[in-house]
Length: 131
Image (cartoon, rainbow, N blue to C red):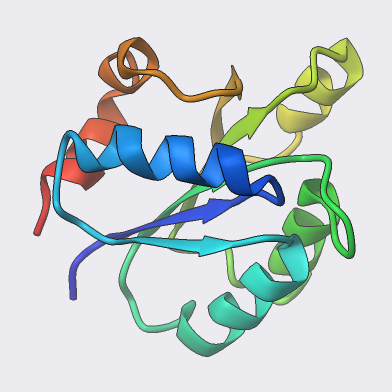
């Protein structure tokens, strides 16, 4: 099964912008959710299928924020095939430091995603190039 990109962000405009940017690089569908709770349901049903996931995760969201999502993912052991890029509007140094505590977070980026940022994140390009 092909690797999947999962976008978790509550802002519909940001979701639209990110889908458009990602679509320029590949026709691969991006699975998207508006909060951590909905994303968690997805991973509880699909997280153990052995297909790696690259998660583009916002931090500040209603219902379940990005940190709560990650905590539950770790508690339930769903993080084994998950690589995370924090994609947020937060510029808080405490958020940047907190991200270092999760071994599957590989990058902390400011929103929005741009073509330049996509080009500077090799693992994102790898996921986009797969069918």
